[in-house]
Image (cartoon, rainbow, N blue to C red; front, top):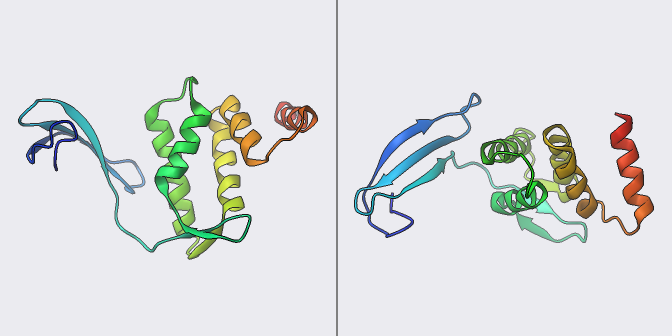
Length: 150
């Protein structure tokens, strides 16, 4: 594995962790040249999932895009990077387990909201406000009321 800091081609693994579901392997690596450490994730390659957007366009499922959306929702919240990675991995696993080659962006959004709701309520509301495209304060208040009732 090439160092992400100095591009030296040799690194060593200093720690390896596998989650309970064995879907990913997390490795802490150290560059043999500059000594800096970084994390890599290894996951098996599987069938490609195509996301059907609201307007009918199709695009490849992009884990990084999903991760980016979740990170934005969890920004400045007491949510660890590991729990965010796990949430995204769980969603990706759920999608692959369905065995469908195509899945709507709405289903993905619903999965994210379900998982975020149990992780952090504020992150859930942030994601919901974008996903459900709240256009006024009343829509936002309705979602808050639903959350408070549960």
